[in-house]
Length: 83
Image 1: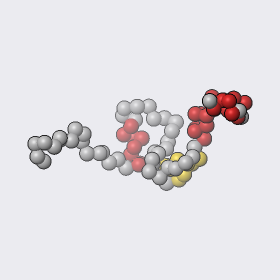
Image 2: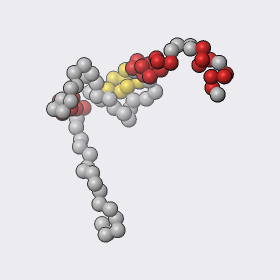
Image 3: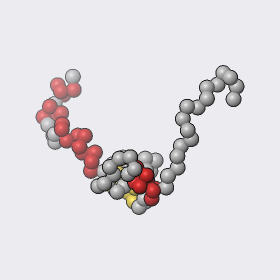
Image 4: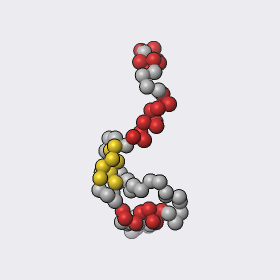
């Protein structure tokens, strides 16, 4: 590495097996109630891929983001609301 190149400031990524993720996280945060290890590379659209069970689950939690707007709210269906 020449003197003009900056040295990396982060350590290499830590590899943790999916089976051990929650055990590792539980040393620092509360992890009860959500026994899923989300695989961000394999998850897509409205499906979460669980790295532990290797199953896909429909993500109903995404509705939380749109729920405050309401279902078929008239302001969301009229052209003047888009201006």
